[in-house]
Length: 105
Image (cartoon, rainbow, N blue to C red; front, top):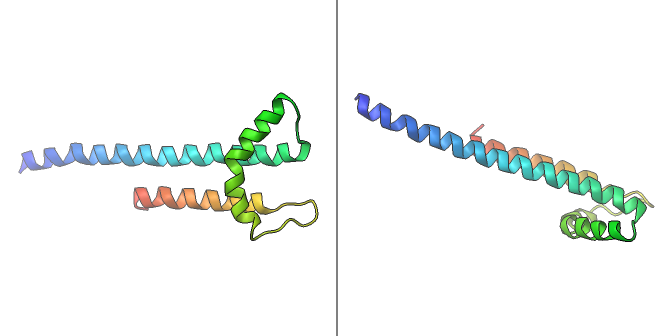
């Protein structure tokens, strides 16, 4: 009986390590993408030119497709665009749900 229990323990540790890695990966992605969305919002206010214009283009190419999903349903109110707020809330919720599904919580 002891031998069976000893072989199960390393497998559990390996599964925990993989799930911890997956949760950390999801958390990191959500954090980086949140920063990119916030950068897109700030850069949209100033519309930089020159070298920063390239940064704006890169950030917009990474965040634009995701934000357009929400802009279809939430049109801007004058100059105020609330779609990034809904996009961030959705991203946070989806990241938390994915992490919970992986850990089984």
